[in-house]
Length: 403
Ligand SMILES: C[S@@+](CC[C@H](N)C(=O)[O-])C[C@H]1O[C@@H](n2cnc3c(N)ncnc32)[C@H](O)[C@@H]1O
Image: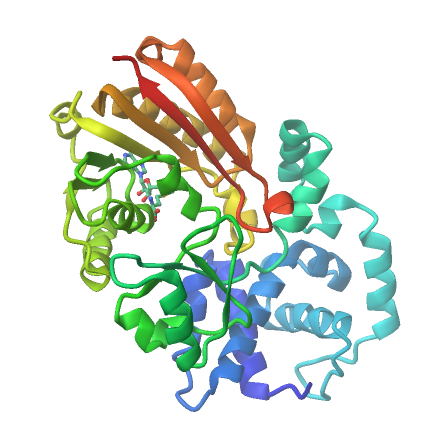
């Protein structure tokens, strides 16, 4: 592989923005890709993928390169040199890249990978927490969460069947395959930017991980029902629910952030979903008004996001133990307050994209033991671990309100 100076410089600049300024990796990548209009799709994927890889392996590479925060340009080039060397890529003799002893890099790598926190490139506290909560499964799970996620699409059945979508995409030179057990899912056989495809602008699909596609199904919605998606965000699940309800009935999509709901609105137009109404949660009144009114309630709760580390590797460096304590408290409050929206005989799904039992099973158990929870029966739950499914880590529990 020949390294191009302007692409490598973009990666180095991006690393410094993420590591030194705390910017989100996805935003940094989006901006970097605007830097040079002449870049083709290969150049763009080099920048995006290399940046994500170095962010993912920050701790391991920093140990090998013996560099730390704040990352000077020189240090960021050293991280890049480690990345390239470990991939067997010959380093160019640019003045920014110091002569790098390949043998030393490989030797240090072999030594460090014997220790999990370096091998998996995670902070000490996270390694301890994962082991405490998942026991022996943590080893395999964190390894799976370090593998680049495949791109999975959800066919928007309001507009097209999955079979038809596959052939439409094939005509647009996007190859996909079905995923057994996920009725609306198609997986790209090769990574590419599908957002620029005509099929996307036509609203034929959404990009949505296979595990995330299980949540709306778990809610067991029927056309004509009233469904409240209480933490709707930009609407990944709301749109799926609309498709499962065949556009019949009512979906109230709520969130505390108006900008996310605006994005949801844009997506509903593209998807041709006509039964989604958005409502910003400004006070407890907005929730009280809905008490006892919904057939189905989805709580896709804010969480640590540890199940989706594959697509957000910078979360490893942004997450803090104190945030986890706060988010568990938010989850507890949300379950208590929003469960009251379910009507007698109706159903509730509590879901997270976390793999930690303290955000999942334990929250549901505590809720069922609480006063509000006494009104519910537990029906079933599903724990999706990434090393078992090959997709994101997720949790979902289905509860039914006593009639
Ligand atoms: C896991 S994300 C939702 C993802 C979304 N359902 C989807 O499928 O694309 C959790 C959402 O909860 C929202 N949130 C955080 N605190 C909340 C609260 N107290 N009440 C309602 N929503 C909240 C966040 O803004 C975020 O959009």
